[in-house]
Length: 231
Image (cartoon, rainbow, N blue to C red):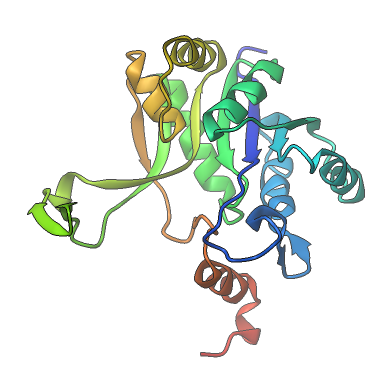
């Protein structure tokens, strides 16, 4: 199937900003692990035929149990991640067998079906795409606690996930980066380095990456039925 789409869900990080003993992706959101909410978004989507979950080294068995318990039938493998996000993604890519791949953060549970669709269709049209939103705040470049410059905000976008590529092209870009010791901040930076042009698809400010206690509070509020929300 030339348009088969797989997803690599990256949930191997051990962020410290949450301030909890439990990794952020395994914290409960409305009674369910955050990463399960994320997996369910791709499980439900008709375009997605296969999912690879890349998780923490010591969390593989627990995540396999969740895959079974929540009926996540599209999850083909649960793999241990590497020391960096880039290494984890690379392992996930090597386990996929689809024409296209969407790489998505395990702590972005609010991605919507329409955003997944739009990201894929733009990648199909142009070759690669990322979900993003225009920056709302003024951004300053700072050196040693002193403002150096103020970039033009009109050209700045905050990059989200999913990020969509032809699997063969992204895999080649990752292998080149590994050979040459390059570590990028996201998948598109690895792709750009290999000459892949990446289109931007406007997403939603609600597609947050849950990394701090404030993010988790916002996620709890956002995920409540409207009748339960109080200010």
